[in-house]
Length: 223
Image (cartoon, rainbow, N blue to C red; front, side, top):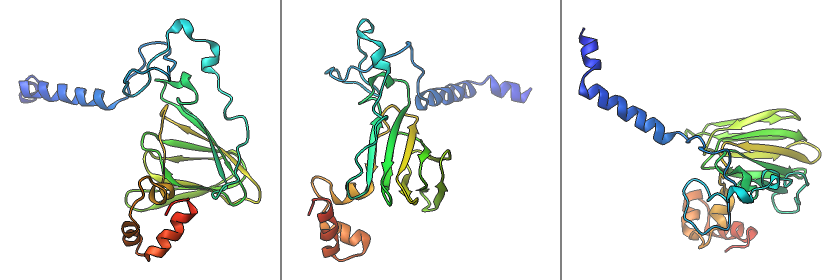
């Protein structure tokens, strides 16, 4: 009888309501329409998505994307090309909570340490042999060498990388549970930000001489 009485108390009801409210606030809402193709030119302020195009102007092409079909140019310092298939390039993804990238890696190429603040990532190897890994907030590294047809999952927000350890080029498809996962490339963020992070800060953080920081920045066209 005591437990039944507690279950009916005002406090229990308020607590139950609060738990349900918190759950609804932290879960992604389900779409309330069949689709919402993004109007990327709209001037309206939007949150967690883009303004919808009028359904009368939507065509089959809004749900089609060929941007991952072609191999990208890997002639850069990382030997890397990422072709993004997010809502900015594929407006039909708006409100659907998913996106994909094509990652081309030259022999010895690397997708340098980076993070996606808004999404979990699933890596799938199409061609080549790739070392994939991530670091936890406890500074523990989890990594695996992946062959064709194998996958690796990267928890949301954690720093991770992919490194081509095969003899030829590598091709990956990465999938995200966000229409716009965002990306922060660690070396670029640290050594090529605008305005630039002061050399003294980076020298102290990495426990190196400031000249080393200047040398690294020069690789990224910064100083």
